[in-house]
Image (cartoon, rainbow, N blue to C red; front, side):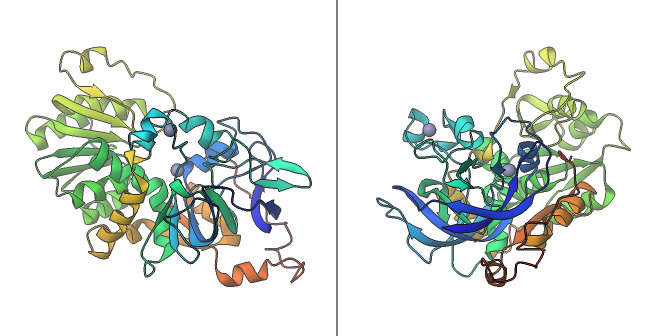
Length: 397
Ligand SMILES: [Zn+2]
Ligand SMILES: [Zn+2]
């Protein structure tokens, strides 16, 4: 079928809204009409070819929408279901078979290899050429075909604009604290960075009633919001020289868990040094420069653990509906960190993210948007003409 999708043709090239051919769902796959998609930093990483995904490419990996068709063998989803789409996994390696798809041995080749989960080929084509997929979904598009295993059913009455970011950014932060960190009410947690993932980590710590939740950031407004989302203490990294010492002072003996979402070597060092004896450091950011990140003595003698964690170690079919439930109970206010844009305004959304005006952008792909973009309806409309260009160079911070 013919769909509209933002295609990237060159490294750091613009997002061009173009006609793309989408295959029908194969066995184990579903076709989703996207209603919203979040924008995550990893999309910009893909656009800049930080990971060399074959071009052309359709990015987007936080899709949410309504199931239109299902392939053979799909039993838990049906047309009309409201769903969120998350990361891809092969559903066949030892980790996946053990119910731990976030440890999938093929996570990288599937999510960053440009192909669908199920058979190693792409569902997207243009002018007779293959177009790469991203995270097995490519949600910067009116429709996605994705593996049913990566598609989580949610309640019909939840705004799908709120569901979209749960599939990556929000679960990455909240899940780092809840699933990877196994935080509980006795836990003292320090979160470095107050972007979408950091705020989600704070909300995750709050929803499991962590005793102490320390937000470390450099923007007073963000730190204020962090408090409203559940942080019990805040540290302005621009004002406090010894951040690790301040964390130890607040907690008494050091944090049980620290999460870094900044990717900054100095912050990561403070995240480790602020831990208690035997505490756990969870870096979730793709780190840039790790200058000064010399941690031997800080890890070994205090018997601390440092381990990477990805996608919040989320079992998506359980964790995504769980986050929706918490939101409905008023305990997980994701709406506070989201800003919504029309699908055609992707460039504005990226600019506002880049300028720090917003925390997390979500694009809404409305019914009218689908109609406007129906082939032949209005070729002069800038939405449908393929002339929407991005003025934002990637990657952004
Ligand atoms: Zn696997
Ligand atoms: Zn992401």
